[in-house]
Length: 253
Image (cartoon, rainbow, N blue to C red; front, side, top):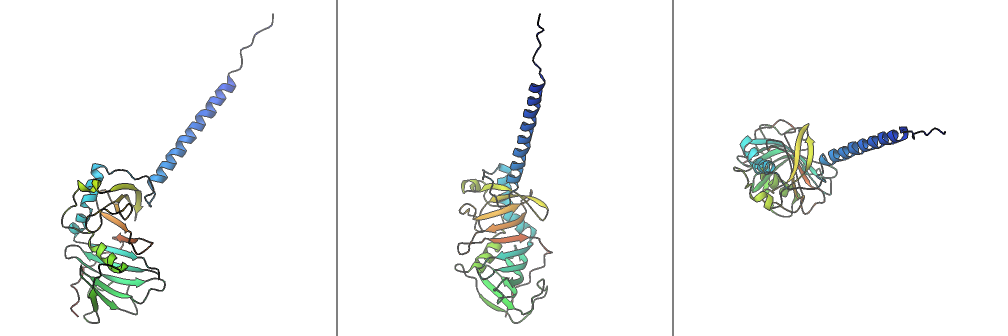
């Protein structure tokens, strides 16, 4: 009588192992993609509604600057001729900014010291610009003009920077209704932050992507990026990239 043999089971086990390995690889790949998307500093991850905690953080962000009294700032102002970089400090309680301004590319004619308020810009041209603004600024050689509300990327930027401080929190209930959203996660100077679409210097939320905040867990601003209608590149304000100096009173002459 012929002997009946059961079919070998080893191939089925081998294919099962292969399938499990493939599934595990797919899961790892999916997690990697998710992590890369979540940490996209451009905020290109799909926007979502703010959680209650994120809304509160965004609402107190400008108040945090006022509460601190002042912040050190590095401001990048776009321009077709090369742009400007302002390194200085902002007094958010007295609404004064002060620092060194340097042009990049062909835009170096305005190098020197700069101080500004909500209404006036003071400039002190210098051939050799120091690395930081002096604690005691020159008493003479300043020129001043009204801060323009339209038509000047520099003046728009200066106004935006002063507007990033407020003596009271923004209305947390209105932020989600006006388009505020979570855009992604990032790191700034080694600090983990959330990237949020939020209000402009007047508490308004503009078109998607118009103003983005890089906020820490306590609502502290680490970076702000704001689109300006006249420029293809955004204005970028980085906070605490150097030690903050006291902002002197505005020049009298």
